[in-house]
Length: 127
Image 1 (cartoon, helix red, strand yellow):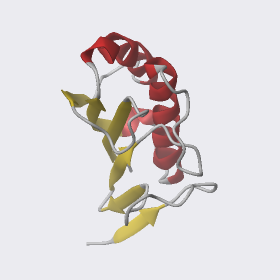
Image 2: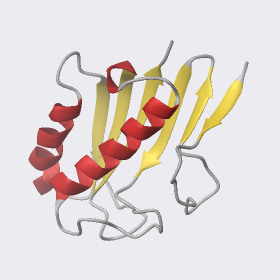
Image 3: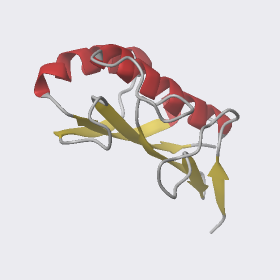
């Protein structure tokens, strides 16, 4: 099995020992992605839609760095801190997956920084 780390230009240093993406045998595994700037500060505090857009743009960058598009995403794990944000997250999410939808699940949980409202991890099949 071949394995390659996927780290888009401008990526900040992660809070823990991981990379934004890992490609193995044409499957891209995108790490749980939070609404952080390059210095690991939470962006768009209090705005679940804007945080979701920020997260999906980061994921899009990882997928594109690996040679794919968002159409290649086959599965997402969506983590939210409050069910009241579910509709806002889904509205933005649907913009990034307008055609064939990836499989996914969504759970409510605490995230690593209290101001983060959403985290998404993805799988994509590229090539």
